[in-house]
Image 1 (cartoon, rainbow over the protein chains, first blue to last red):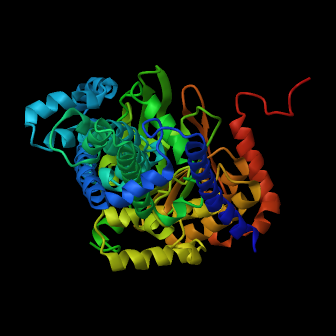
Image 2: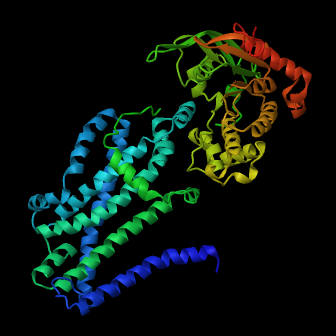
Image 3: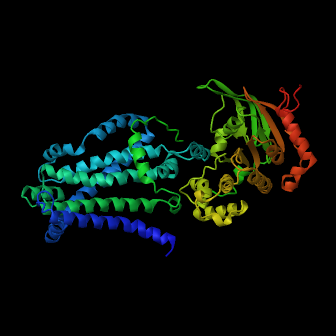
Length: 285
Length: 275
């Protein structure tokens, strides 16, 4: 076995082994310690509930997932669009900076009861709006930062080519921002699922993961509540994996061997530092 | 639109660059970067600008390229304003940094100016193949810039500058970041490329031997405010006959000495201090 494939095996095998170990230990503790179901149900009883309520679980994942997806798509499109405007126009930049700063500190799910009332108790629109708002913030912030990453030498080059403003945006500004845009969307993907799910705790139509978790817990069906939590975890992972794959898909092949693998460090540094960094630098043409 | 547009390209009789009393003051810093610069670069001529840091040689190049605007004086590029020359794409430019777009392949980088100016795809591909041959990197068209060494990237940047067959090439210390060996090889290659294309070149450099080896004339500049101190004509024979052996020729050394003395005019040259 080559060193490389052994490395792959260790990397893929180690987390699986740890997961199995944790599950076995959990089961043993619950069984041997005779822990009550309401404190902590055992993995086996949760798995049993997953099987028993499979159709309802799938429907719940679909319902919450659709809300999260709509929020993710709409929030990302709006976030990228407004960031683009802000990078091109100082007025939009000055108008949007404090608004986004405000939005970033509001616990967005706290708006759930208000929005539920606003859109009516039988509508999913409130939840989708909440997911969209939660998505908008990191996408906007990261995109705007990315749109300011063009190097002076590239701007000089574009001027020497007498490139039109639209050409500069298409050929230089957006490609330079692309890794930042996708970092924003990747962070936002998890937020979309969390927001869509938690928003269901505050009323509205039933059938999603959030409402089923709360109603199961309220009727003392603890293992079933956990089964829906597992559904939420799977949904969040799915969103994260799909957005990461999307990022790889649109990034030129050579960019990856030379390390974009440290994306998590980049993520934290970009999202935390840049609300203050709105100093306008827009010698675009 | 073709690459052989006669109305734009048959201007060989006009001087490439005519600067008359050009000055540049950076208002924010209150610095006079250039003061009363007069310079003529004839078509097909290779002219180097040399001088200490802060003498305004890069500023002069940026004015010729219309990347900045002069505070006074007039600039004519092939008989037009600098702005018109930029819009007409009369010059190609290369900087100290290669400035390739990392998300584009090497070929796509070379084709960038052609793409922006609406050349059809097939023509762009032909031209980038031609240019890759010219700079000796035919096998690298589908690679990404990150996969290339600094010297190779700079060759691609030069190929890109030549994409639209400009009659004027502006180069701002293009070999400044390269090691000495790569640098000398690039210089030899540049003389060959210039001989093949017949373009006039304005070349900014810190290096005396580089200026001597490449140039028909060396323009020596002095700082604070940036002025042309003197212009030293070179006589190393036609560019395409300049091989590496010329670097060991006595004529070469005497010209290096001439440029060095011109650079140190006013202040005594290092080593000849009275003690």
